[in-house]
Each structure stands twice: as structure tokens, then as C-alpha cells.
Length: 230
Image 1: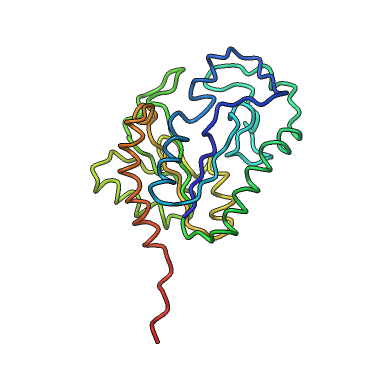
Image 2: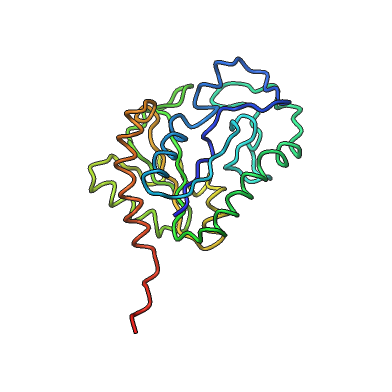
């Protein structure tokens, strides 16, 4: 399998000025809190390769297509990002977006995975208001449901409060997996973990221990049958 984490980092590279208070970089608008650490823990437990983003989504959202709205956000969850108004988007695509997706392509060519799992996190509620999000994990997918359907069942069997395309839908925000999973015919899913569950090292360890065997079961169920012995 191959693990991905688009939104692991809140890093703002040299030469980029977002024009925001530094405290905003510790919020979910800048990174998926806990997702990077969880991805690294899973990679170690599963002995699986991982491609992890190293730039804040306020600089450029690695999980959006180059032509997609919100690629370089002008605002996020009610916070203006004034430095992005005159951003050099082609430069950011060249410096950050293209290398990340090239690294994913190289990892796929090297490992030939039967499963790609993208690790994300979500907030218990939007900062600017909205209903609480009760799910512990959300499974996101687009039209290819080969991994999502069994994942939903496996998490439910493990006693996890799991949502199907919650708290938002993979049919609308799924650019990385649309390109590298569905676009290549590889089974894929996003695993969204509520970020208050993985904002400590103990939380990361707990949820890695829950998720790892489920990913193993998914991979094994998707792996091609070996040829019969002769």
C-alpha cells in the first residue's frame, strides 16, 4: 500500500508572505492537525511508504487540481489570507504542487500499490459555527468504492463512530486520489480522523493501532490472488 498526507505541514516557505498572524498557522486552516504524525506512525507499523506534504495548505492546497477553486485560498474558515490576493500561482505550482505529485507518481511506479490511503483530519466543528461533527473517523471516496465500502464495515465492527463521505464528500474534494488512485485504476480512500482525537502523541498511538490492522485487511482483500502452484 501507499500512504499519503497532503496537509501534514504548516510550513510557509521562504519568499511567501501570507500576511496573517502567526497564530493562525497552528489552526486547522493551515494543516490537518495530527495527520502527519499519524501517517508516520502508520508507515512505521505497516512498513509502508508514505508521501507527506511539506507546505501549508494556506500556501497551496496539494489536494486540489491546478485549475480548482481554492488552490491558493483567499480566505479559510472566516480568516482572510491577504498575501494570497496577488500570489504568483504558477510559481507556487512549480515549487510545491508539482514536486509533491511527482513524488506520488514515483512512489506508485516503484511500489505498484493495490491500495492508496490518504490520511487527513477534521475539526469537531467549524470555527465560524455549524453543527458538531460526531464522527470519530470519516471515510471519503469518489466513484471507486472498492476500498471505502469494506473500510466502513471494518471500522464499524471495531466500534468506531464512522461516517460515509462525512464531514464532507470525496465526490467534491478528492483531487489527489482522483488523479493518482481512480485515475490509475488503483483502489483508494481518504481516512479522516477528528483532530481532537490525534492532537497528542497518545492519541496518535491509539488511533494508529486501530487503523493499521484495518488498512492491512483492506490491502489483503484487494491484492490479486497468487497464481496456482504448478
